[in-house]
Length: 283
DNA sequence: GGCGCATGCTCAG
DNA sequence: TGAGCCTGCGCCC
Image 1 (cartoon, rainbow, N blue to C red):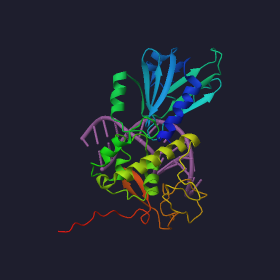
Image 2 (cartoon, chains in turn green, orange, red):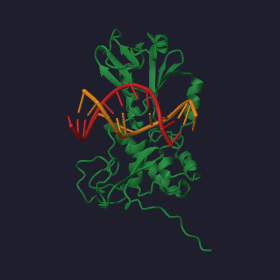
Image 3 (cartoon, rainbow, N blue to C red):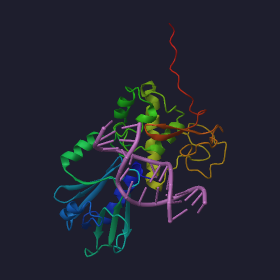
């Protein structure tokens, strides 16, 4: 599931296998062949993620930018490299002649796999909002965007320039956990509410890094599920509303709904997240 | 086996 | 707004 926690784990795994090692770099599929030839036989220094972006730094200030998009995959394996299967855009191999365990990694299906200069990387990072997985993240930058936007909060949470790393699953789940109407305009939210949602995302995404899965139900109930008690067996679902269209809400029993918002399927409970109405003004 | 959809994002129009 | 990327999965046959 390539939301931010997946990229964070991938960077960590790449470092465990390849950091500070001389690697063979190739592009069996051919679409990254020129860049691969440039990097081949050089030292991979470190991998790092920002939001849903992955950067792999090589010696001589060379770095590869990878974005997995909806269905890109990066598989890392221990052991000697097997012949590539399918369309392998990028392959990294550490053959073990350095005395460490041999490893290899294959990248498939990614919309972005490219060499990037330091200036290009800075420009890309400058477009990203705070990433809940980064300890130095400043959530008030997200608040500044949300509090001044008429756009629905359900669209703002998916906007990587507002928050980096949040995808469709975390969007739906955090809105449910805080009983927020996804269509509510950003600027009608209170600062304290956005702060609570941010802190919840920090914990939920850190859990995602630990487990490798998005699990937003912590039975029998948790403080942020905002003091609510589960009224149904949730054993078959790790989440409250994501992809549960037509099924009963675990808290109130109402039917979970779906609607397209910002070109993506949005899931919510119409009773737990009632439609926001701006306060009528006396006049 | 075929089909359609999916955790994302960019670009053309 | 729609196509594109071109993988993996669940579902249906």
